[in-house]
Image (tube, rainbow, N blue to C red; front, side, top):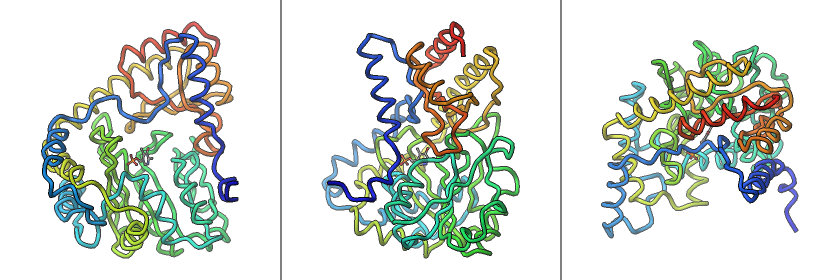
Length: 382
Ligand SMILES: *Cc1c(COP(=O)(O)O)cnc(C)c1O
């Protein structure tokens, strides 16, 4: 019944976890869900208000422009200028996305021929792989290992694969490892991409979720980056807007044009009222972002402190709302936490083969729930 490409899609690991979670819930277990990478905090009121006002205007009820309203693309360019000091031409170097997942899922169709390689981090956001497979490309997993600070070793990629590679994903601050890009890494990526004619796609979804004064860079700040690649960004994590479906791709004009051309054929743009709300988010006061980071930071400290008191060796992440915990067997560990303590975490293999040996905690629940999770774990043999 299904096309053969469906067989290449990853196994239904997340569906299986949902099933196990439902089983526990039916038994009346009070589940603490630290599995989902979706902020529990509400979208700031001034953004919701902007949506409500824009939704009342019939002008906004028509098909949007494919690339995004000029005012939205200007707001994106303005935000990139203010935040990263990068100048973008809103006409050619910015395109609106229905969340960055939209861009990640579709970009391979514009640049990857059947059999071409895409270099994707493992562990990594699963859509790098599925987008590649839908374009009938092949994925080369670049392992992110703890001994390398969760950064890929570009010199380790086999020569024949580098030759056949068209796209490369980088993602810092990183989901799921919570690693940040070390000094000099992006320069290395730009040189590698320029030498080998590879398009770089930087996924910067977590640049604003950072702690201890850490300020995440944009890939595009690196000299030469605009010649070799683009960056995907999103309002989802920054402004607690995962349900709104709005983001952007910015950078190299030819790459943006290719992605835009695919999108004109598969969707009809982002609801204009949502774009107006996004303008309010990007151009308005940013204290809401600081406040969210303060909340996550407190949760991070409670979780890391708790895990360390249980004997786990785990660093304080500088960014993202994840904690990447080394364990012996990730499926067994996640299953045990769920079945014996009602705690949901994500097994690392769900993010690729190099995710084995880890589970991911998302600190998208209140401090009291994280404390409760630690208390439950204290009673277990882990
Ligand atoms: C959440 C996430 C995204 C996509 O988010 P959107 O809601 O589609 O903008 C992309 N990449 C990573 C690594 C993420 O964690």
